Image (cartoon, rainbow, N blue to C red; front, side, top):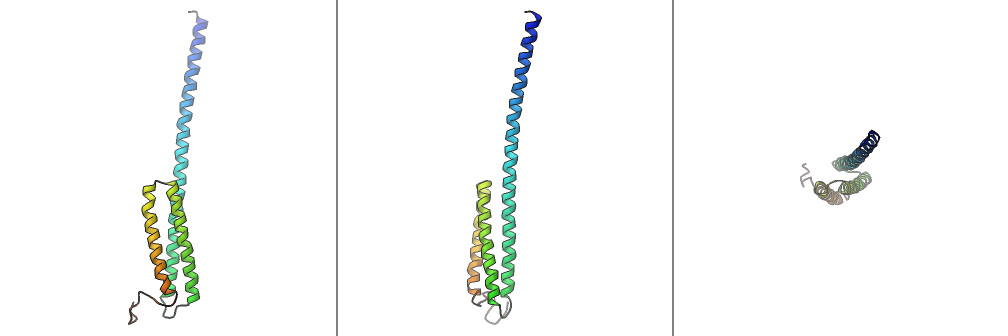
Length: 142
């Protein structure tokens, strides 16, 4: 084999190896970027869910505070209860995003807990809206 042919063959093998390495490296980088994108979406979904829970709990505290007085201002209670209900629905929407973006088994439990907690609070607010405060005893004790 003459030296020109050997050089040409060596260049072809080197080019093929470089091309193969570039393809493998490009695919690995694409997988890595896809995983990072997926983690970021999951992180954003969980952050939105936690933020919605926090906002709902603050609204629930406001409703409970408004009901603790001896003569609750019912229009104020209704307004705060409406805000609580709106934010409770926001928790459910945020949890649906978590279910879509994250692993299902990690999101379904908290979703059911948030739903049950909201349901219980809404059920408790119904009698409160007409002036009945369920956590007070007949003697007026708290």
